[in-house]
Amino acid sequence: DYKSLQDIIAILGMDELSEDDKLTVSRARKIEKFLSQPFQVAEVFTGHIGKLVPIEKTIESFKQILEGKYDHLPEAAFYMVGDIDDVIQKADRLAEELAAQ
Figure (cartoon, rainbow, N blue to C red):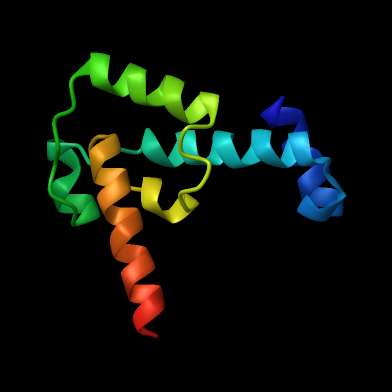
């Protein structure tokens, strides 16, 4: 479970985790970031345009992240986006920026 793994990571680092535990941590972090969707009421504080994502789409995307469908996408792509399509677009942008360097 992610909570107990956080203590191990804090003390020993990610390298000491099993591959399964690393995958659990990766997915949990992506879910945490994904659920930090930019809300319209927070635009003033975040500088991100608010997005309205239907709860059904959020739940379906959550399940897909948990199942590993998006394991190949970087964690940074999940932060302050609307729906999973926004995640994919952000991941593509990040890849393009990295390739241009």
